[in-house]
Image (cartoon, one colour):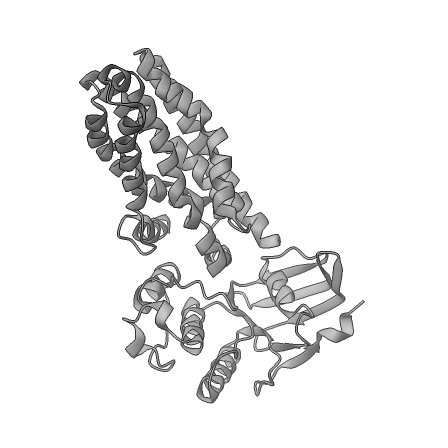
Length: 217
Length: 190
């Protein structure tokens, strides 16, 4: 059951998938990394000091882009109704969606981090911390994104609202994930991972409840 | 297998501030069907969704014995993929075979769902409904968008379903040839 769901979700969300445009977040991410040196000037010391933080902010914004159609399209099409009639809990459908959403944007984001950090001239040590931090933090970003996407799916202008709602919730991940760059300290990375895991555990329940509530509306 | 049964007692439905209907009861056993009739906006779709368990009634209870399948205006077929792929997802969950030839879908399997006409999408949704093999059918406007051949086809499918021991609730403003008890929602307006 969950395999069938996951296969469909992956086919839908992966780049080149059914809803298309999933490479756009990556291009957006790279564009931000490319623009930053133009905006603050080519001072290598400044770029090395602030570049990691910029990559984090770019990753956060890139994670918001795919939210628009993450849940809304299936809600409109009645897919969750049909699944409910077959005894598939909304939570299960959302767990599969969370996994697919993370797989669709995070691994490519990590790969794109390499050219992005090269553009910013970051040192090897910083890049390593950054990659570990993103690896620990992106599941949490995906979880927040899914819950918010489900909450706003039935609203008009839900996509813009989703973006606004994700940002404050992502602050803890950003603080600890990007904080690990300033003070090389594995505790911050571990804390990012802990926040991520907690969010991943909660998100399917929040999103499932949101889908049920949208049905009543 | 236990005999399918669908019963509702003293249902009331409220949408927003408006009470759509109240005091509605029905009880259907194997081979029985009920044709819900009424004007637009009277609450036919809401009744179907309440019977399906997708909407909480304002008052009253629904009990279902047997699995339920629902056909409404939302076909739950991914618009971007070919019809065959879209149906294959549901077949993976349900396991049944759809009568594709009979529904005239065999030639359409490699056409993306978004290119299908309204009537073709309805036929595809019917294929999913039949393949699900549930004893309780809840049909919300099953004849919308279908040509005369399609209407006859749906009536044939319903008759076969009832003859096979299934039951059905059909909400439609169009007349049905199938042997179904009429249920006029207008009688339950408060």
